[in-house]
Image 1: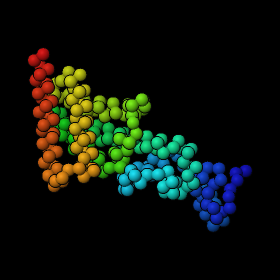
Image 2 (image 1 turned 120 degrees about the vertical axis):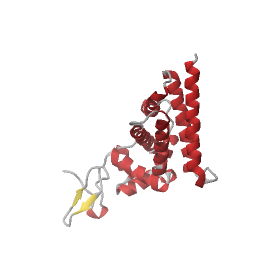
Image 3 (image 1 turned 90 degrees about the horizontal axis):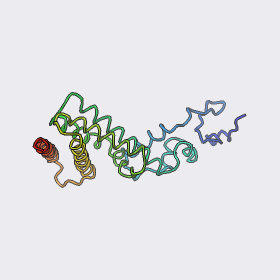
Image 4 (image 1 turned 180 degrees about the horizontal axis):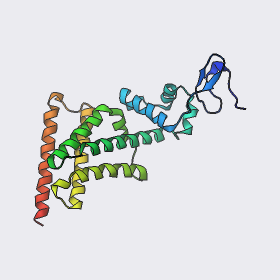
Length: 219
């Protein structure tokens, strides 16, 4: 028979699952899982910043004892890794949706604006993508490759060979990440001009891709 602490404790002894007082006895709520832990962590970092993230805080938000989290995340770094995956998956999905039905300069603009929107809407989750190294982690490396592949596919209208298209995709990733990172951290001194600056960045990038296309055509 499952053992319980005194009802006043409000926790299940074995796993820390929160208990709900029904008036007669305490019963377990929905079992905790990894998705719930990452959901709460993502919401916290987006609203308060990544520095607010601690396992103690997540346990408090979920209404469980901290040891209950270790059934679903190994440690704090593992939680950062899961947030990093969540952030890159969100980014890839948004970029893929934005690139549907457009090509050429419009595709570059659509991807750029989608990237910027993701960072504005999920600043903490996006910041997490830089807090955990992806080198040597197959799953994280695959999440980066997915972003690159989506951008490369969107550049098909520029008629580049595979190598140049992939290099261009990496360049766009670097440019959009850098701009959005600075914007999120208030790194631009004149924020009221950022929309014009971003439009100029897209024009510059597209001009560079077209120049690369002309260069490869002459080889």
